[in-house]
Image (tube, rainbow, N blue to C red; front, top):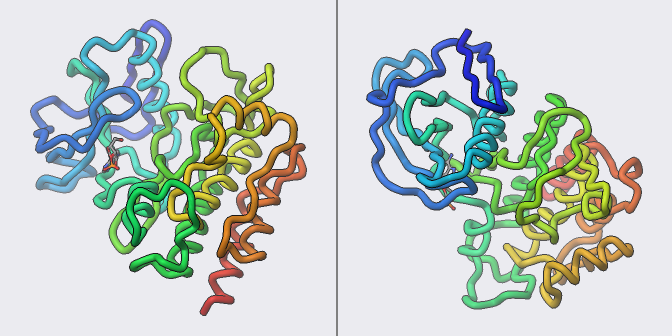
Length: 305
Ligand code: ACK
């Protein structure tokens, strides 16, 4: 077993050969700026015993990152290592390189960028910040949109079954692969255990957060992920609108704690809004599990056909 230790984190790999040597990885180009630092497209040799090279995505930590940021990345790594069976709707960890500085996290390359940008690209009109452009969509059909939602719910079913709370589920953290596959990504905020209390003060995705995670206790559960999933559904039907567009994030947060819910977007069907609304029950226990959301969404897909 590979064993990796820092001052705060210790990781034990149950899959062998996940540690890459730095010379097995050749960076090709930059994909963008992630939560911890740059994300690169890279070539890796010997991924999963495949004798050749495979295109991968490599996440690195900023050169001057604090030890806290480094630890967060190692936590993300530890979280991902617990997800032993690859799931088609979750970005798969292929390995890591902890001997290098910066530390590198090697994940499956997902070619079509994040879902938020993907949805917005499909709008016919530019510079629209708040409108439901569903019917003016260029190429995405209704079934595509519901399929995105269904796929994310499947990925979340898997994460929930592994006791993984994502804590930052949003369209920007879903990646789009070949054939419009959706993969849940960015476990940066993900923490182990059925419940996790937040201690640190870092920027928070307020518009996506459930009331109980905004309260002083900041209690995260799979049911707070369900709330965020409802907001993600809103992002999908509106082709990437920002939730609570007329408010600042702070204003939205205050109102969410007092019971505010997103209104039904124009062109959103009653069936789909019903699913969203269910995610926004004030009491976490009243929100459906991901398995139920998944079943409801697959019924909608059947109805479309
Ligand atoms: O929208 P994007 O192209 O998709 O820009 C962001 C950027 O890196 C910072 O997060 C991209 N990205 C992140 N993870 C991956 C991945 N596994 N495969 C491909 N692109 C990725 C993301």
